[in-house]
Amino acid sequence: MVGTWRDDRIGSALRGENPAVMRRLDSGFAVIGDVQFLPGYSVLLTDDPSVQRLSELPRSGRLAFLDGMDRLGEAVERACRRVETGFRRVNLEILGNADGFLHAHVWPRYEWEPAELVRRPVWLYPPDMWAEERYALGVRHATLRDAIGEELDRLGRADMRTAPPGVG
Image (cartoon, rainbow, N blue to C red; front, side):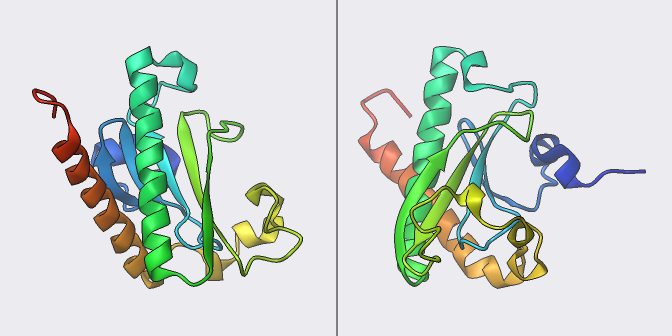
């Protein structure tokens, strides 16, 4: 049986076959999350499928990955503030408990979240929400996805303008 892009997220991104990829960053791929019960959920994937932990990268690679996580987090924050209602903040996480490759989660958080969850980790949301079709990534998320991509582009251009002479 032939797998899907979800079975090889990084390899499919490297081959240009991962439809969740929003942008290629220096340290990996900015992708929109498969589930969108918190609209704008995104993930930074490493571009090396053999890397399982941040500590496996050389210092320069670690800094590049963390910079990419910061850039994606800021892009999600800017886009959600502009496009979504009740945006409150962004949470950034590098966990690695379920997937065996380095990745970082970018979770937008909202004022409209249930009171018992709004200040708790996203992972405490009911398990059925992670699989409900109404939260699956789809065409209805195109506006937000495009907004995040545009913000990534703006941040990238800003980085180029503020780089010291001879860098970038």
